Length: 114
Image (tube, rainbow, N blue to C red; front, side):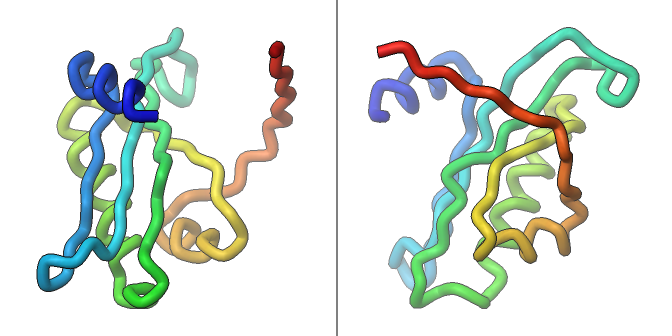
């Protein structure tokens, strides 16, 4: 994981934020930037994949996650990214739907080759 972030920062393909409260880490969030062929909904083909969103339990329900995701979106919009996606757990789903994210029913298949 350390190599990922080191390389991503050097290549400008990932932006991360750390939320602090009185000097204590309260939450984190990142967005991975990728470009694909454009389509009708996203002609630029620029996608931001939001990941590693986490709020320390003692700081939950204080807007940290909401503010973090909105900060990530604001920064990425500045760089021409207007389409975002990520996978969420049920616990955090309400935060993101309140911020305008909608379920996308596109099926995903995966295969891991070891």
